[in-house]
Image (cartoon, rainbow over all chains, first blue to last red; front, side):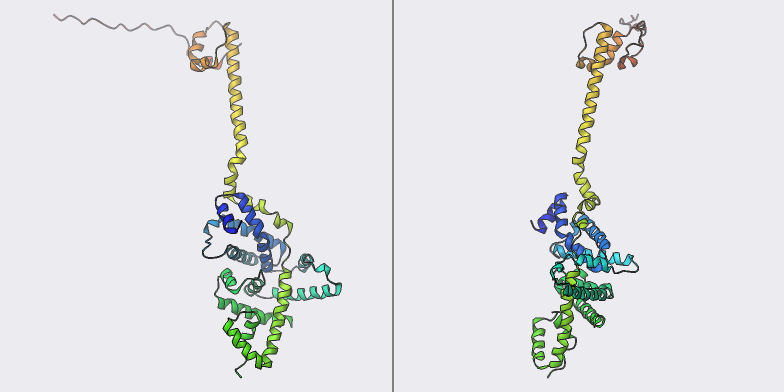
Length: 179
Length: 176
């Protein structure tokens, strides 16, 4: 069953269809949110808020304007920004990230390679944390599910030129930070 | 040789050029070692990000995977949709209780009426159809009422001596 069928059923109040839609998209929403808010608990809260908001306003979704995932990711970005705004000082929890990272199949690598890889990821993680949220969003979205620039523009509600400009700025800053 | 590509090299590394722009850049890169070197540096960063950023996205924790009930509880339209199913059992219980209470009351009234009057028990239909008249007809002030007092008796009007009927003149007075 595709998204449009599930959405049609959700609009009739079918709770099973809503649960199916949640199961289909909760992982992507969680990961995208985590890339922005950078904390597991915050990403969980954002995921819950995203689905409460999206399912209670599903009638407003217009399939002729955007794909469902684009609409859902737009909400995810918006909710993640709100979460960041409420937290005055964002903190980086490397332990949390390292734990989740260990679940990505890295345990098969030799220990020295693994430790180099982890050191590199930590560097990138810290550097990404030093970007402004808008620049970070562009980078995270670019590597998130291979989204295209037009899709990123739609999600962030920006013209392509703005997205390109943000990517260039983020690139220069990351290069300085990682050199 | 054309001037160096500059910012376009970042766009090239991030795959943000149109096919035409990319073809033009390729022509320039064939002859420009400086731009090729700079592009290699940009691409090194892009490759580093490509190999690390997706790996930073964590595996979904079980709390998220099993989080649907908490979300469903926050959605009023779902609560409304499931409400009739949840309230159907208490409804049946209420109706059942009301019917049993009514049955018990009918049996009690019938038994009391039969014991007290030495008459065969009345049917429920008869009781419902003429509750007050029957009670009124069987009411006797001498009978001790503390033993058995059917509900309908308590509201029966007290017996009174019948008032004399008004005299109605039937004959017209004669006019002389």
